[in-house]
Amino acid sequence: MGKFRMGEWVLLISQRGKKWLVKIGEGPYSSHLGTIQLPDVVGREEGDFLETNKEAKVFLFRPTLEDYIFSMERQTQIIYPKDLSAIVFYGDIQPENVIVESGIGSGALTLALLRAMGGRGKLISVEKRPEFALAARRNVNQFFDGRPDNHEIVVADIQDFCMNVKADRVFLDLPEPWHAIRSVGAMMRYGAILVSLSPNIGQVQLMFRELKANGFANISTFELLKRDWKIDELRARPFDRMVAHTGFITIAKKTPAGVSYQD
Image (tube, rainbow, N blue to C red):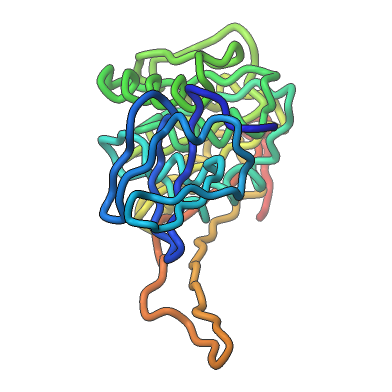
């Protein structure tokens, strides 16, 4: 990607791992480690460092999607990276897909889907709360430095939404996703994949019944637990805290309604 340019994002990392996400512009940036001049970042390579006025080293990196998601403006709980990565993989995202998502929240899943699509296909994000749609639009535009051509946000209830083409993938992050199954099923081609994230197992059970009743098969549900480890020259042990249960991921494939399929 070359050297840093004026106006792009830089991730500042201290020698102890403290991070700050900053847009390169005119003027200083200050933290408890001291002050750097942001114009001094321009022209430097990733992995280089600057020294603050307190002689502390601050390393320069481009932010990953994970870095951006945890620092962006949000009014709702974001989907954690451990779940995002599984949703994108098990949803089998392909660049030419027509994808519908509902429950845009702050846009974390939107960003992951758009990144996986590589500027191709079409992503339609359906969100019934205008304030969430607006916040997500700001986050997406800020990350991509402009509105992606293959992305559209529609302010509507997914239960009332319809479109002229069939969806290849549908992603749901809704409080009561079972109410949306009939409507989204009607807009999916046969063989299309639906992925839903729910925090409670009771929600998953209600989802399962609706999926079976509306022509979905190959239904599976799982959760992911992530435990980090502390490694140094003398020891290796798990951290006391871990990212445990965050949600259940349910995956299903669309078939003609009324066809009997035994999972």
